[in-house]
Amino acid sequence: MVVAEFAISLPAVIVLLAVVLGSAGVGAQHVRAQDAAADAARLLGRGESDARALALVRRSLPGARLEAARADGLVCATVRAPARVVLALPLVEVHGASCALDDGLGSTAASG
Image (cartoon, rainbow, N blue to C red; front, side, top):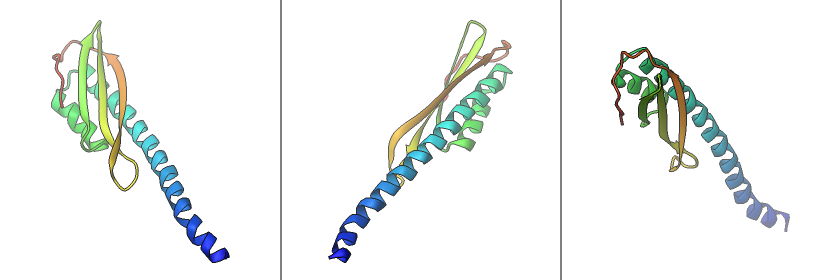
């Protein structure tokens, strides 16, 4: 009797463990997206090219998209990337956004 109960409950425990570990991974990817957005905003604020900022973002988050906008002396960067939750399926999208002072040397553009 105990073996049957164990056999029934084991798959549920494995699924629960996968969901918990997957959500912890999504949290880590969200932090990486936020850090990448901050780094991209600083690069763009110093006048670096959009291509260089996108390369920096994709080094942290492969497959990520970068959107940049300039207004009121600030350059803002938003990073979006598919998050891998369970079994490497892209079920969720993580994003991060950050702004930095614009030195006025760059151009207004968005990369993707």
